[in-house]
Amino acid sequence: MGIEGSLAIALQTDSRRVIQVSIHSNRPVHASRVFHGKSVADTLTMIPMLFSICGTAQACAGVRACEQALGIDSSAPVEMIRNALVNMETLREHLWRILLDWPNFLGELPQKSAMTGLLKQQNDYRQLITGGNNPFLLQQKISCCDLDKLQHIVHKISGLLEQSVFAMPPIQWLEINSIGKLQQWFDSDRTLAARMLHFVRQQQLNETGRCQVDTIALLDTQQLYKELGNNDFIRQPQWHGSCRETSSLTRIESPLLDELRHQSGNGLLVRLVARLTEMAQLSKSILMDRGDAAVSYIKPDNNKLISGHGIGEVPAARGHLLHHVHIENEQIRQYQILAPTEWNFHPQGVVARSLATLQGDQAQIERQARLLINAIDPCVGFELSISDA
Image (cartoon, rainbow, N blue to C red):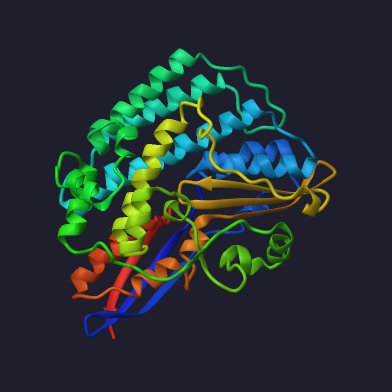
């Protein structure tokens, strides 16, 4: 019963360039008010059903917010499982874009069978590491899973990624540490991902959408409470007076990405490589036996928290996801959700700025626009219209 809404993106052109960008959202950003007056238990059960896209990340942010509001500390094993499930969801969402969307830009058919295989492995993975329990409820205790079975499932997932995306084990792909080596890889034309990057370079789209925009750093808790008091912050967020980007590109680091950023800024090619890099990194983290297994999660400073209030933050597939809850007498007094779409698709945000740089005839501008929107990823449907001045 997802209620994600949609976006309307309109471009106005003149003399073969974009002169105006309009982004209108009908997303129900205050839909979380449905939780007001409900119990914590009922709310945590409803969250992944109400927000079907990235429901795992939503559930994770929700339980973390409620735990903080109630002064409950989750156990390290439960946090590890939560992180692993969010990582797996992010991996799935990235693969969804690659296997089902990227073929459209290349005139190819979507690779539905490979996607179906990943979905099955994701279900098996969740069942194994949770034992059928729900780690996104309060005070859950989950036993350690069978590590041999876990390794078997992760091996299958890595094999699927090797066959469909990287043409080599994902960990080996991470050893590509220069633009020259990257070009050698995508010139091989062996996988859909390689063909996509080859296409972007061939069409001279590497720097398409390059613009200047600040990124989200650590959100100061006291400033955050101040901003949350303004309903416009949830609808069209800014931080210290400026629009911010939150995406794979803003949180993933590697020597290859450093070199690409130096050459192409935050252009299209860099965004696609950031998605691939995060996928390869996540293929390691879902094994849950390494120090880098957990998604980054910084708890708000408890000394700055207001009694009865909690903030849950999760690096979801499309960017920084934040839940804020106020609990009184074991009931939800206030609930707010700030999703990455509101940051990235702000009317003056990174998508608007990227689209404003486009040039060419109407067909070229439309193709570039769709590539950029897909790369930044609104997580909801959108309509794109282009008109002459």
